[in-house]
Image 1 (cartoon, helix red, strand yellow):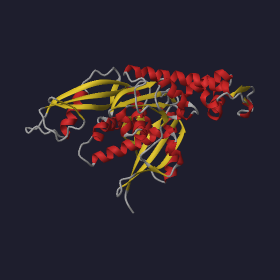
Image 2: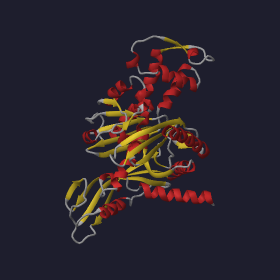
Image 3: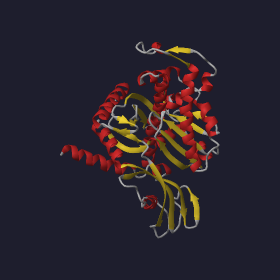
Image 4: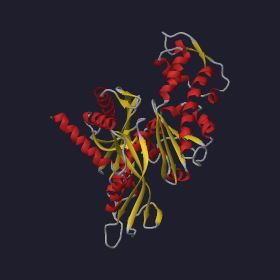
Length: 417
């Protein structure tokens, strides 16, 4: 029987925790998603952890479901980091090539990326990723992979992605206390892009918009490089709140109404169908028309997309991305949301679902699982890089593992003392 290796991705969202489990065959090295589990995310509000104890309990419940589904014990994971606290800034690093013959090796690339980290990080923030855009050797610029080339001076233009130290420590502590080790921390939108975007889309220019419960993440690629990283503090839960106010019903009933009858105006058309709220909850009274519900929903969806388009304008890419906008997350499942995206962004638009993996699980095509599956793909890519010479995949994961390992060790020491 062929040996296999497991990679687990944990996506701690504002409303739901999702876990994806991937299996790598040592013979074929193919990645197969063998488990997908989800559960309510208690103790998380607007992307931030409010109660460690509740989050730990939620993770343990979802972990148990994943272990039951796979009949395997989950011991380590790649964990998503998100929230409106995420920031990004440009940086440059310069070093002298170490070897007398001028050949650039893996350690030179590591040193220049470390040099790029010498930036002014906001108080109580820390670096999550150092993402190189391009390298330069002496006077030669726009180099993607400098390994094996020769020169005296090596430079890098990189994007530094940072997050609040307190949030990172809280997420790390919650996962560690649930009995799962942490191999890496990855920006949630970056993980989603791993599972939904092709290299061609990244080269042409594409915006990935992940509509979560409390936040909407925006990631823009062009020529394979990241141009924009932004997390907006508005999401699908705000649509639910609008429905609750507009129909004068409680928030739980509003969520059910949104799921069962929600759509945009383009999807519902001129329908004047009346719906009894008592059909959804016997204790509630009143009626609403499908068209009125669609008007409420479309107004908020337009507002979210206008905020995204405002961010695209900051990098001069509004209406200028040939590969268009790819929508993921739970909010992307609303009927008619693509039509609104096309109109607001003035771009092609489509729903993104995990690609590039094998699985017999039907739920894999759900846009809600793009982050969890992307985390597994990230772990697989870095697993590949660890067995090969330093590559662009290895560069992508720079900074993650060592920082997380140190943090986990310190947490364990605190709880043992």
